[in-house]
Length: 260
Ligand code: NAD
Image (cartoon, rainbow, N blue to C red; front, side, top):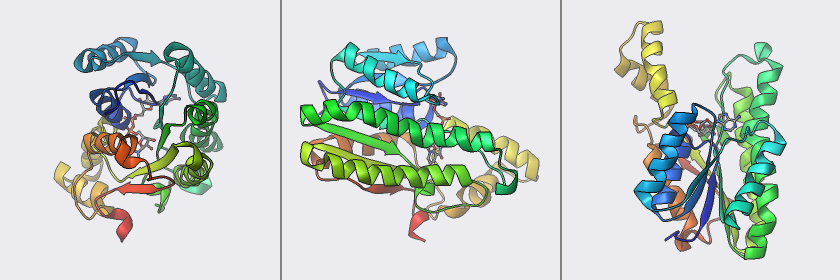
């Protein structure tokens, strides 16, 4: 359903971003993938996405901590593909600390990447989408865009902020065929989460199963992780014709977490 569309997915060299990139490519979209990491590993991901789906996939290693990184990434995509139809703002980081010890530079970094990068990318892509009369903007927020947990002040502030940005952009795009939605995952099975389980089990002297049930999934009534494939499927739906009237929403994919 997305053949001929061009999508940028930030932070798509691993985890949720990669899951969304995979689903958009499988639906026929050409892609710009973005992220930070080992060049060989990223090239393997890029070529696999391209070959498995018969679409064009370009890599842009923009550091989205810098405003000009986001702007240049969108400008380059417009230059290389002539259009940007879909923008998925997914790149994000976390830092966990009581607020009185929270490093100010971590606050700045989290606001820069998890919130401001989306603003700069949207600001640059929005004009061309409006002109084309079609656009899909998806911001990967979090259950923490809707509710808080202690010790995550910057992350929760940035994720609530991006839900507000989502609503504003939705209103500005509504007459122009440009939708903007936030996806709000609870715990998702990504390498990032998987790699924490062993260490947490060792640190607390409990089993891996207990870490999953009683630590990670304490807030998630389903007691199951969401998967990156589920998030990819939702992104494809939001980009399809069926999604054209869905705008300004914050859609939880959290096994019931934020229903409590
Ligand atoms: P991840 O660490 O697996 O992936 C993060 C991606 O962002 C990687 O591709 C990384 O290279 C990229 N990135 C990091 N710093 C960057 C920078 N400065 N510039 C450009 N790219 C950069 O994490 P994930 O779990 O897939 O998380 C992706 C998004 O989903 C984040 O916004 C996160 O807050 C959100 N999220 C994750 C979960 C979860 O349980 N995993 C839950 C809710 C929301």
